Length: 298
Image 1: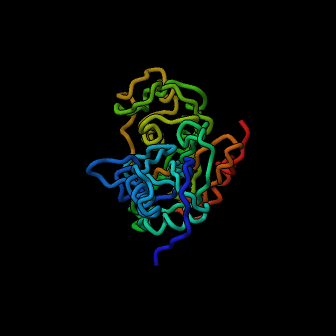
Image 2: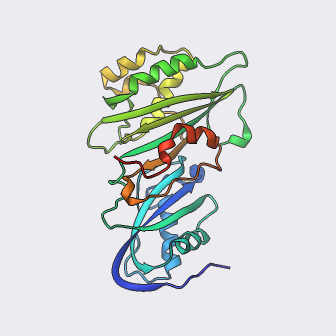
Image 3: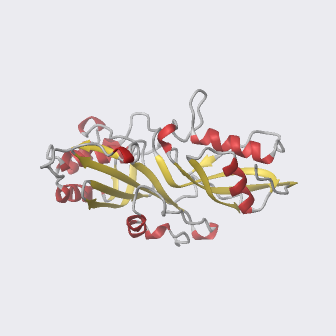
């Protein structure tokens, strides 16, 4: 049975923020496209169906980050404007009834009109799940990026960690920037890049004020070059100095990339994402991103 709750219409425009989780494996990314299946398309359709045609114009979502094809999200945040009045939990239950199982709304709340899911954010956190083993693990298909290593070989994790420290701080990240990137500047600030090893599983936790298009996947690809001995840790210093994408490693798979959290000023009261049910151990996520408990002052 489709959940329906009482709703009223007012002349006052309201802004609703929603927290979203999705398995990006079967979608062509977040952003709406004419001929492709995207997360944004599905949620906008769900909103339209749920409010029952009360809007005169199509509802449009604005998201914190436009994740690429195959990229997952634990804590995506988006907003939309509406004149329909519903309780917060009604939005959650109602929208989920019209969404595929690979997309779920975790929370919803009315926010001030000055809140913007994209421009109000002051930081974003990603995690990359890298699997290195002699054979693929079928149950982690499209949930982790995979690199084959012979049984006797392991990654040089200490060198990878040493290389990662060159990226901390404010830098020109042109060497890790996609040619399709639309950012006004390649200068970003990385606050954190931690690498956690669990046997054949490696988790990379990154937190920055913002990321360039393909930046995380390009960093992972270059760190892997260091991990398998193709390059030294000091190579990362050269990459930053060269400011040229051609010198870095190829873009790595989207399969293991997760948008984990988006940070907002505390006065907006944006709820925390749920880290409890994913391919990445929740304990690692909570330890890496304690600031994901929203309400951090800036």
